Amino acid sequence: MEKSLQGETSMAREAKKQAAKPVAHPFVAMLGMLIGGFVGMLSETSLNIALPSLMTALHVNIGTIQWLVTGYMLVIGIVLPLSSLLSKLFSTRQIIIFAIVAFMVGAIISALASSFPILLVGRMIQGVGTGLILPLMFTVATLIFPPYKLGAAMGLIGLVIMFAPAIGPTLSGMILGLMSWQWIFWMFVPFLAIALILVIKYLPNVGNISKPKIDIFSIILSTLGFGGLVTGVSLASDQGWGSPSVIVTLVAAFILLAWYIKRQLASAEPILNFHIFKNRQYTTGAVLVMMDFGIILSSMYLLPMFWQNGLAIPVALTGIVMLPGGIVNALVSAIAGRYSDIVSKRLLTVTGFAITIVGIVMLLFAQATSPMWYVILAHIVMMMGVPLAMSPSQTYGLSALDQRTSSDGSTIMNTFQQIVGAIATAIATALLGVGQQASSASHQVAFTSGVHLGLVFTLILAIAALCLAFTVKEKRA
Image (tube, rainbow, N blue to C red; front, side):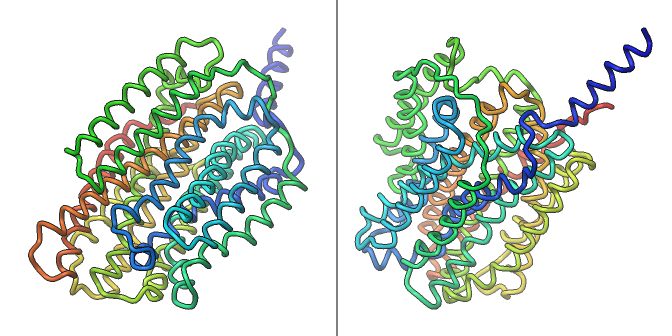
């Protein structure tokens, strides 16, 4: 009897070491998706450094040009909630191949655009690709990697999610120093072509095609609710939060989202299983990821413009001075992922957000007359903290789910992550404008005041995330 129990225990331990859908070389299998996801996240901030130039070239104001950033995230926010449903209707390979091709088409349209509306259309088509790739990266990772390697896998995904937005302004700055803004989009195409080849050759089908009944009304509610939320905060950055159109849009969006969530909770086959928020561990991890993403996107929106308009640094040099922070981001992302399996996740997240706060406070003390090395150092400090918290937060949240709910968990996490990112960018834009208008000093000083006000919001996010990180609980052996 005792031997039988020992045998069963041994078998259970072996099962925990196995992946849900084992593949021979999981890192190779994910390589095409990782490249596609990297390009998608790179696209989120790559235009930030070019916004001042685009405003002049396309004859639009800052509120309009911001739609190239938030419009992209708007489409991602609409597509992401549907990715879980699509993964039950189509194979993993079909969805990812379509996503990469869609991104390529959008990039080419943007590169050839001669007006703002065409450029915006191209950007929004790119958003379709990113919205499909992001959640499937997480879902595939949780299925093909054994539990003891999930932290390392999340480190790779964290590298994509955190390093790409951080390095985007650097690459764009270098391109703009030598060529026109159109080449930012041409840059994406060869990487996407490589990703497409790798996906076709190595990516297995790991999803379960169950062909569920399609709830058209829920899809409409999801599209209008999530889309309306991003649209409302984007309009607020241009028209102000007291604008009637902004208030109506946001109220309608919240009502539709509440209706959508209530409908999913009552459904036997929901598009998204919101019941997983009953799992406290998942909820904590997901909220930490959302906050972390809001920090990185709001700061990466403000900093490139601060370099150019606050410190009066040329666009090409802006890319170079942001490079050290991007490199540090990549190194810390890799280290955090590698050690999140063996080091306390609470320690990593708390330390990460604490360091982030130090970096933001340093930036708040930066002035139009500050030396270049000081702002570079502040950026480096912040880029140490943000990725240090990301990988353990992701691993902590997703490791609480089983195979049945992992797809919903990654989709919900990514959906709200993008929504929070769009909202954070819009709020930072609005505060930037308020800060500028409140100052009667020179353009450089006024712009610096606006950046400081935007960074106050980023600081509040970081402090809230630090407080939540203290609630992360370690599993007892």
